[in-house]
Length: 403
Image (cartoon, rainbow, N blue to C red; front, side):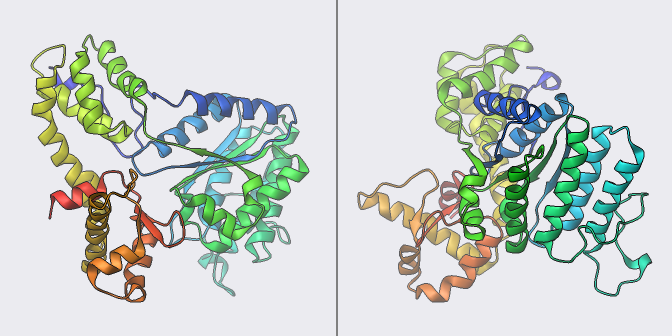
């Protein structure tokens, strides 16, 4: 079939042609936006899930909904090697500009607060030319959001931004991807700021997305975090949603799948959105004509698996050191051993850390550096004490297949 008309999009964070299975989250967010616009109390939102389930895609879709509601929006991606001040300042700069507040002096004051907040990231005693400039023309405001205590400063900053939004009857939404990579100090500040703006009734919300252990990260920072956020677990698609993700784009291009082909696709992808797009793209390219058949899926499978092995699995595996790779392979083997002994293993292949140590014939304490490094790199996570799991679906299967 014509590869130019291939509708599938297996890119990182790239919106698929049919955002299937996420209607519930989109509708719930529309309600949140409307409630806040009417002065009703609402919690900020946290999306959690494995890699490849479409958290970033959904985060972008929610931001689009906020833009359509004429909110001010900004987005940032947390990184473990970067503090919150600079990326958040850039995001809030965009959000304030989107608000379209008519009073220039009020806008300049808040922009000055944002600038002061950002420049507090510079080293003590730094000269003016050495301070990072977020591209804001307004002069930095002294004595507001510039104390150096990130918790105090963020509360003051979002309070001022929220006041500006309230003036024009709009809201501000800040979208934070990879939220689990915020530093402990920044996590604490975000929780404190969300608590303060919620109590003040200001029209500001944070929408975060991260790995499954993000709720535990937030809870470890502030005990009240479970009441601050509305947690939504983003999972793989069920059969009907996975079929829709394949069939709807195909029909737009005058093509279709046979029922047997759709069944084979779900068996291969398990409903993970990234896998659905990856297999769909290859199946379209190898199929000689419509409808796409189960035989086409069989031909496409090796190529799709090869592409995933390089772009989805391999790129992550390459980030690990030899010692870390040994640990990952032991996790994959431990999951097999559990199955063979009659124990149940979930889709993330969660295994006890003691089982990994036993397989490697090492003391658990000696493996802590490798485990901690993998946690920081986002390759594994700990959903409960004494257990670890892959953040990437089917990663164990990939490791076992590659030896």
